[in-house]
Length: 135
Image 1 (tube, one colour):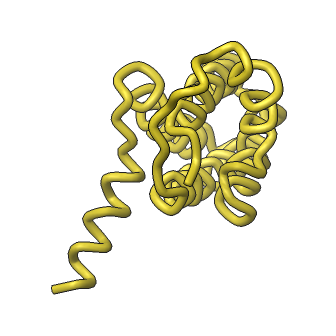
Image 2 (cartoon, helix red, strand yellow):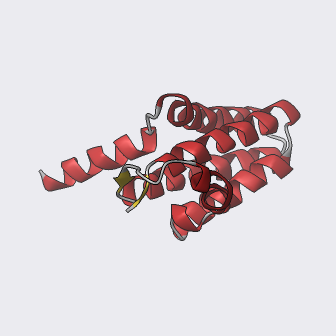
């Protein structure tokens, strides 16, 4: 179980990094996000750099009472983000700018939905998959 505010805060940071990547067409920014998503997807969101920043600097300033959530849906969302960031990185490295732009924009759309509205698209897809497997 994790503090449900953490993934939303991380999505805000992700949105900023992805906006910078789109504006600059920088392999550097998309690589940073690829690493973040990779750690979140494969080691778990609580082990990611953005989670460390949240736990160190943000969470201590917030109320000690918080809603907790299962880590599996956000971890799946990080995996989906990893796939999009990987495609964007390939696009940046090969100068295939349409691939870079579309993959980055889709990742940004999902991150912004979570940051601004608390709607985790990857989490919803995960939960749909769980329901589908039970049928």
